[in-house]
Image (tube, rainbow, N blue to C red; front, side, top):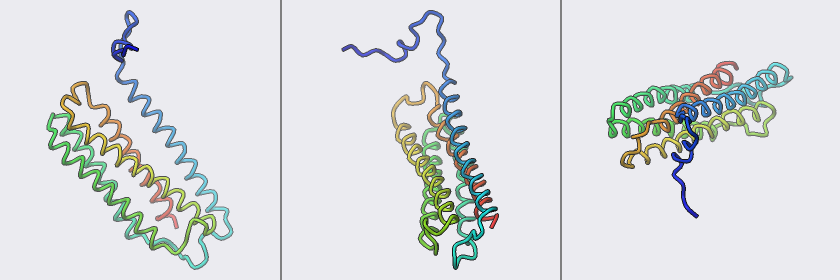
Length: 198
């Protein structure tokens, strides 16, 4: 069986123009679909909170805000750090990109660790009523997205060591960075919903 160059295969039709932006458009549509899932969870949380006869589990008066606030500052700040990493890459400074991109990954990892510490200190569980279930569902689903973002960043970091990897553009890094900004915005909404609106 002969292998076919994908670029030649895509451009076989006369007059066909290759549109690099279509991949990013598809990724944006994916993020919009993820937004719908999170918004459905947020709406469910709000409706359940407003209608539940007893919202917090027995013995729980509220959530501690200090540690989640610190984690939030670190996570949101990592979005700005990711932006500067992209700027380094755009200017062709690969080592600057790698260092700042790695810092973004470290900040995301700190957030995940902080989430783990918070979970380990909570006095309620997933089965502690509607609040317990919704709390772990929302923070866990978001945490899964953060871990996914860190893994994707690691992949982009590894690919940066391949010679000529960015000769045809930086779409992979741009997509992962957009995903990371999305995860940060979702966390801001989640933080307001769960920790501020108590």
